[in-house]
Length: 422
Image 1 (spheres, one colour):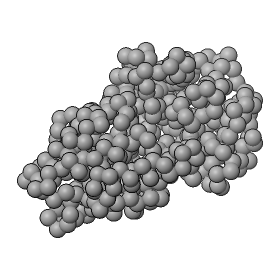
Image 2: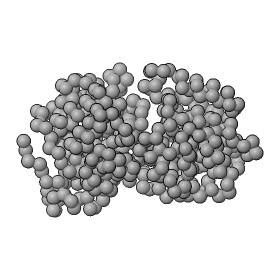
Image 3: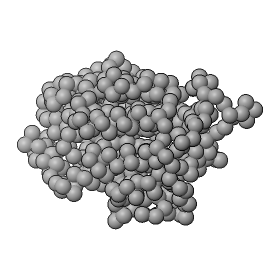
Image 4: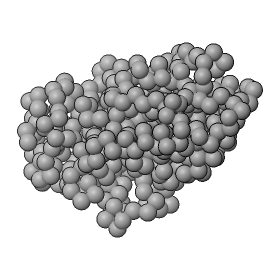
C-alpha cells in the first residue's frame, strides 16, 4: 500500500524507547515536567498523525476521530492533521485529511504506515481491539515498534477480564506509548490497577461532545413524553429491555413514546442482517407497545441528532455491557442537558452515580427502568433539576475544550528531553 497525497517515506527507525507520558489532567503543570528546548520560544506541535478508522466508516471511533480532527484544526490554524485510515479499500472515499490507507495485515504495510507517521510531530493511535488486523488487533504493535515520534495512545476499550493475548496487546501498547489517554476516570483506574500502567503516564481527557447554546427542548406538558435511544444498533444494546419497560409502566401515567434512532452496526449487518431490529419490532408487538415504539433507521446526521435531543425528555441507555468505560452517547446526552437513565456500566456509574444528572438501573431489569422513567417524567421539578446539572458539564466536554487538552499534551511531549539515538 502506498501513501496517498504524495507523502514521502523516510527510512525505518530502530525500535522506539519506552518513555514517559503525563499527569492525570493536562494543564500548565504538565509543561513544567519536561525540559523545554527553548525558554524564549517554547516548542509547539504543529503536525499530528492519527491512526484510526475514519469516515465514511460508521463507528464510534471514526466519528470521534473526525470530531477531534475538526476541533484541533479549528483551534489552531497553523496545525495540520493527517489521518492514516484503517479500513477496506472498497468502502473508502477520497478525503484531503487522509494521507495513508491501512488496509492490509502485512509487516510491509505496518512499516509503511509508521514511516508516514514519523513525518509528524506527534502520532496518535486510536485503539480498540476490533479495528486493526491480526489476532486481537495486534497489527498495531508492528506499527508502534517502528515509530520514533512521541506517541499518544487513546484507548476506547479497557477490558476487565481480557484474554491472555488481549492483555498482552494492551500491556505492550501502554508500555511503549508516551502517554495513555482514557476518557473516563474509571478507565484510568483500571489501566493503573489491572494493567500496571504508570500513574503519571495514564491521563484522563473527557470524551468530546458537540455543544450548542440552546438545544430547544419541547416543553414536557406540550407533547407526549419522549424517551430516546440512539446509536449503531446490534445485540448488546439492550433496547429490548427498554421496550419491555414501556409495558411495565403504570397505566395511571402517560406512557412515553420510545424513539430508537440509528442504523444497524455495519459488522452486525454483514453477519446477521437486520435480525436484531426485526427482533425488536416483534418484541414491541408481543408486549403490546408497538404504537409507542418508533424506529428511525439510517444514518443520524449531527443536525438530526440535535433535533432528536430537542424532543427528548429522557435518554435511555439500557446497555447489557458491564464493562464499558467509555460512552460517547452518554457524554453527548448529558452535554445536551437531557436527563439520562442508564444501566450500571462503569462510565455511567462515574457520571450518574450521584443521581444529579440522571438515574442508574440494574442490567436487564425492565421494572427498574420503568420506575426510573416514571420518576423523572412525573416528579415535579426533577427533570429540570437534572437538566440544569447536566448543563454545568457542557463547557468541560465541548470539542474545543477537549482539543485544547490534547494540544497541551502534544506540546508537553515534544518539549521533553530528547531520547538518545539508537
